Amino acid sequence: MQIRQATLEDAEGVAGVLMELVAAGKRRKPATADFALGHYLTPDTRLSVAVAVEGDTILGFQSLKLAAEGNVYDVTPGWGIIGTHIRPSAARRGIGRQLFEATQQAAKAAGITDIDATIGATNDEGLGYYEAMGFRTYERLDGAVRKRFRLP
Ligand SMILES: CC(C)(COP(=O)(O)OP(=O)(O)OC[C@H]1O[C@@H](n2cnc3c(N)ncnc32)[C@H](O)[C@@H]1OP(=O)(O)O)[C@@H](O)C(=O)NCCC(=O)NCCS
Image (cartoon, rainbow, N blue to C red):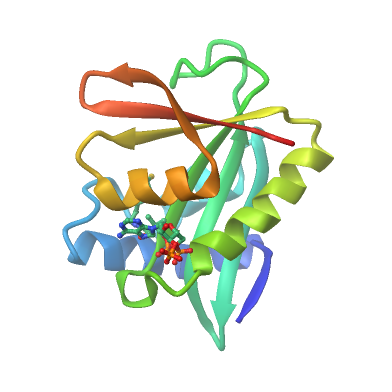
């Protein structure tokens, strides 16, 4: 398995990960290649989109965006905003852990000091994963938990 930065040609593969999550009942938001391009691959705020690739298949990806002034997530400007998506068929193989190594490198290179992860309050695997990566709860919203990672 290879970890590398996503290119625009990965839009279909990234959408494939999202579609598998929808099929497993773990996602309700869009899962198309257009969504992957517009939301992850092309935004000006993109700092990193690390993909885990085996053969021709993207098994998972992790996005890191810069929280801009007035960002819709209401994250402190200058922080990173992280999102992680692994195919359920490839979960618990350490892919999320490897992706976070790549994301941390990108965050350091961009001079980011803090990363926000906003997770559904009932998403036990997401909460468990980010806690295991060193994120700690700093805010509770209606239906969501905000966790913060401080770069060493
Ligand atoms: C949550 C998710 C990102 C974890 O990715 P992963 O590749 O399976 O994670 P890893 O195998 O690298 O696990 C690393 C550690 O995270 C924790 N973890 C992972 N999955 C977990 C689960 N289902 N329950 C509790 N802890 C979990 C564990 O501590 C694990 O270490 P261990 O396997 O040595 O015990 C993945 O399951 C996923 O994409 N889920 C659907 C989307 C989502 O919820 N994303 C996160 C919120 S936006």
